[in-house]
Length: 221
Image 1: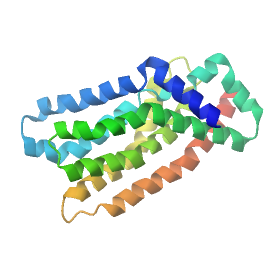
Image 2: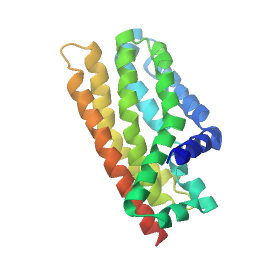
Image 3: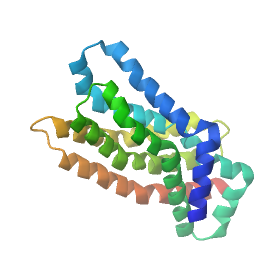
Image 4: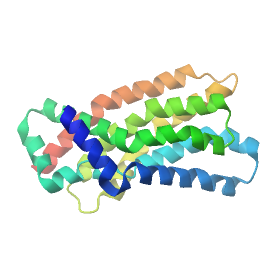
């Protein structure tokens, strides 16, 4: 599993620019917001956590369609499906999700504090938004694995993956933004929405790989 993780991280970094493309897209989303809402620094600071979350969410969707595509093209996906039991396939999907998050989403979390400065956010707000992104964005990878598994056999399944995944990650977005606002806005709480978001990440860490494994087996049949 460690070898699979290292292999997928390397493929994720090399494929299509990997982390660089996601960071550039993230930067583009954040950079165009001031042109739309105007130069009001107080308004930018208030909506900053939501913009960071929306930008990270959209950037995270970019590479989901490639989660299983390379394995399908070289035949290793068929070997993974035929190699073992359903639990082993689900575990392999879990490792691939972690590798995808490390290669494509973790750089977005690292870049979030700098982009938060562009939005005139307070240091506490930047720290809260970065923390929620760190614990919330893995859920996007786990949910996206199920969508990518459904669309893996389709010739142009990238748009379908985004359509399938986006409604399911909205609750994670809501709780992540709520927790970020709660850190800097009284009397809104930080801990309850943060714990709910973390619980959703743990829930999808189990459900996502299992659903993706079932979809991969169905597509192979």
